[in-house]
Length: 312
Image 1: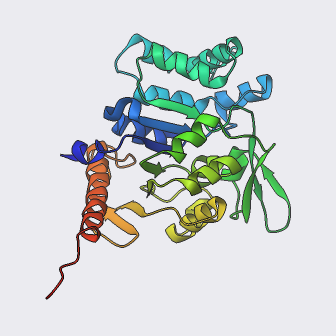
Image 2 (image 1 turned 180 degrees about the vertical axis):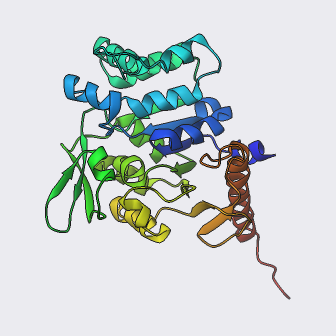
């Protein structure tokens, strides 16, 4: 039943990064090629950060993570893609999937082509698009006027920034803009608000495409408070940040975890935690909650389209 409501959509787009986007995409992968993930490419930590410093490439980590979530398991391809080198060598800590994507990028014309080659290798139908194909970093602006450079440092800030930007300012991937412009359903989150959800929205062309979309837009909140400056934001503040950057209100519904289902005009609560790992969204519960929100929206639209009864 939960699939039936979501199956009505021809173009579903999920936006974010890290493990949160991977979890959403793997929950919705029954949509196949009708599902697209727009992936943040500003990470500068771990294996990804080392490659960026040495090769001046985009951040591959979140793309690799999404590919890993969508790959059939168990398989030799998925195991190789997630293999991390151990020991005390120059390769130590590097992820093989990141190295493969970097190598393919150097062989291809575009980073998107490298991603598509891996999708074909791992038999993944869901489309994955980097937010930009040009290297850039997330920068936070502080009230005192100074800047904090890079995702790792932004997440470690003591006080919340007053604004975010990208340096250098780069172009959004054309396919990402087209995907949200023509989407039927757009999902934002879950994930680190400042460093996973916000970076794609900071691309002017992408924000303009989001502002122009006629899709229903649902924001999925995190299960727990973030250990970052965004952890002190209320849900209303986070929504306001999104709308300010996009230039207009676009979020129709917010989905949050609650022990009981509580429906509201904007914020809605559903049991979303996985009982085996409460730090993860339960995939079945997430589908149920999304379907319930979409069903309510569909019923309200149907009622509003009913002809008025005329009295004689």
